[in-house]
Length: 199
Image 1 (spheres, one colour):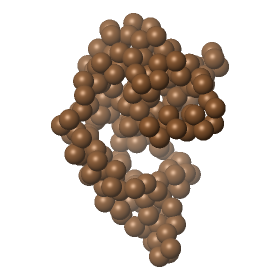
Image 2 (tube, one colour):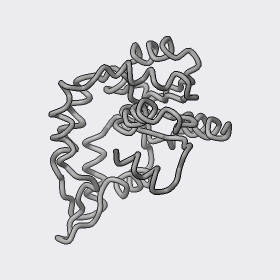
Image 3 (cartoon, one colour):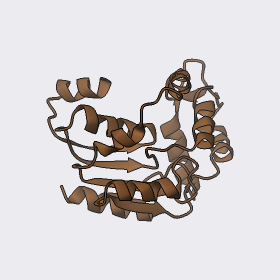
Image 4 (cartoon, one colour):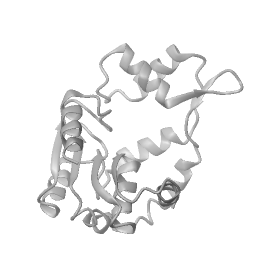
C-alpha cells in the first residue's frame, strides 16, 4: 500500500522497479496488485522459494539494533556479520556502513530501519502466500533476476525453476557473492545497466 500511495502521489503510471531481498518480493507483489504499472523489473537475490536458514539469519540481525560508536566500528561489525558480501575494499565497506547506519541523538550509530520490521516478517513467515503465484505475475513483465553465487536466500535450484516458469527471464549469477549482491559487482552492474538501457 505504501508503494501504491507513493506512485499515486507522484503521478507515476509506469515504472521500473529494482528490488533487493524484501524489495524483490514487493516488486513481485506490485506486478500482481498493479499489473499495468511495471514496465520492467530487476529482482535481486530473492525468489518464490526462500531458504529458511537465510531468512532466519536476516530476521535475527535486522530485528535487534546494534549501536556502534563510530564508522570504523560499524564497518568492523558489518564485515564480521556479513562475511559473504562481495565487497572487497575499505571504501566499499564504508559506503555500505553509511547506507546501513544513521547517527542517533545519543551520539551512536543505529540501524537506519525500524527493527520492528523483523517481528512482522517473523510473524508472517508461516502465513506467506504461494510466492510462485506472485512470481507468475511477472510473466508479461521484462525481468532481470540476479543471484549471489553463495546466497543463503535463493538456491540455484529455485533460480533454475524461475527460468522454467518464465522462459524470457534474464538471469545473472554474481560470482563470490552471498545475500545479497550489492549491484556494484562488475557482473551485476553491467547486467543492470544494459537491462535499464533497453527501456
